[in-house]
Image 1 (tube, rainbow, N blue to C red):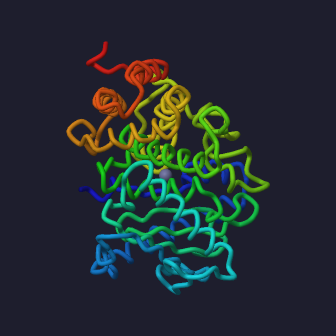
Image 2: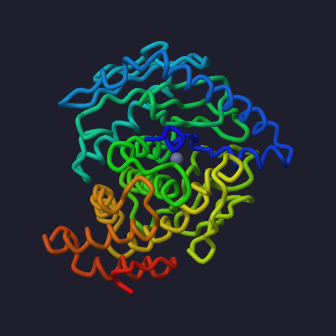
Length: 353
Ligand SMILES: [Zn+2]
């Protein structure tokens, strides 16, 4: 598949950092400079490291391997905690270890998935990546994750947030399940699915329900100079921060150019539309059931192809809801609940109109 369409952004999208920088935010400006050099690093790393890809696949159980980049841009620099190893003095390492473990448990117990690739793939985390980096990312070519410390102003430490860790791991899951291309509607679906898993794991770990959860994404990592409470709101798209323009209805969808300035066709922008639909379905059948439905539907590669549009995701979810209700795995009303939710966000499937 075309490498240009692989997931290529961090948890904090570059278009947002650019807006903040334009408003005179120095931390955002510095982050952009760092991100540019990481792009270069990723390209080089692929060349040097390609022989290692897939060599860490274990057919039984995933091992968590936490590396300390020691504020450099090196991947797998120093192994500081591995599976079954004791607590260490660096609490960021322990956070990465614990929160990724909780995400692995959720994937296994609620979704029936054995790690990111469903074959027990090891999880490789690089913490303290770069200096004061305001970002976290899944790196598709390396199949590793990198987490910055944040600068303490715009963002605080990225390893401390369960929805950030689960969101990045879910990008890995999407890469293996249906390879949604990171542009336009398919890219927004890629982002959406990471928010779905991020929220579902977060609610499970915190003992929340669809009613009691705040449905915010990234609320635990925003710092004192960030102009808002989170990066996104699945419940009320467009209300998370000063520059949040996420729509919650397909009437507001516009075809944007595929470039960084336009967030690769609006991948973090239009994810608000399916996000709202997922929130509405969760309210009716519960977040865990809704996540199970979405995850199962994501495997319908005949409908959800790498360049899938929202209407195709909807079609796959409806068909999966019919199958799962028939098998008694989801409540009977699920099919109509999904239809209503997608109708509310302006998406109608050709099969149901
Ligand atoms: Zn993302």
